[in-house]
Image (cartoon, rainbow, N blue to C red; front, side, top):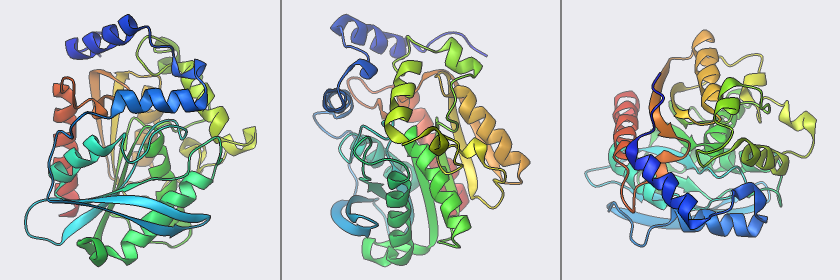
Amino acid sequence: MSSTLDPQVEGYLYELSEQGLPPLYRLSVQDARETYRNLSIPDEPPDTVEDVAERTVSGPEGSIPIRSYTPEGDGPHPALVFFHGGGWMLGDLETHDALCRALTNATECVVVSTDYRLAPEHRFPAQIEDCYAVTNWVANNAEAIGARPDRLAIAGDSAGATLAVGVGLLARDRDGPEIHYQVLAYPATNYAFDTDSYERNAQGYFLTQKDMRRFWDGYIQAELDGEHPYASPLRAQNLSGLPSTFVLTCEFDPLCDDGYELAARLSDAGVPTHHTHYEDMIHGFLTMLVDPELDRAREAINEIGDSVRTKIQ
């Protein structure tokens, strides 16, 4: 494996260091959210799409805001329900707007971004239940957003990818909607911090081991929750019956080994799995689409788009 960071990423990390930005784990929840938003939201969206619409759908504890993105071209298009990252604690529709726009064009799907409840105000399994409710709504109301009712995918980055696996498990266990494909970008898959990648990437590459400990502590109510397979998919005894899967990992990421092990477990369980590894990238690079645009982010989004179109168009 390569041990060299992409020069653009190296420059980005240097700029953050020069700004004296404190680590997220040292900030209050509100300050961490504000910092994350400032790092994630561009002045102008980099990609245009045919249409963007907002609505709310019913969730287990109230309404859940969603935002749908429609690609150009004749529809209806397949639907892709997206769950944003941010350690279950940060992020919203705005922080991942640029990525959702790019995914809409790359996948040629109607992308539905989900504004699920955040930790620590809401703990596991609130986030997964919200994401499942939105997935269920899209499956039953595809025509309302110009999507095909017979082709459904889910996707997420980081904590959102972990939620996507949880949604897949819920759909399987509850005999819920049929999900044809899932895209998991650098997922957190186990409530543990003992892998080689947690050690070698503990700090220095934006997401740190201490960040992840803080995120998990905010997400789960007790240690027992961290052992639940809906929170930690690697704790599941049986991963069979999940959708065909695209897993993306990065070399300079504490969660690298989490993704590697999940891809292997899914494959062993008979789930068709494609694992792509970006040797020169850090956690979260898919959202680095502005100031300036990261070339490798666009490459990875296009790779995801090719995979999704091949599987569900």
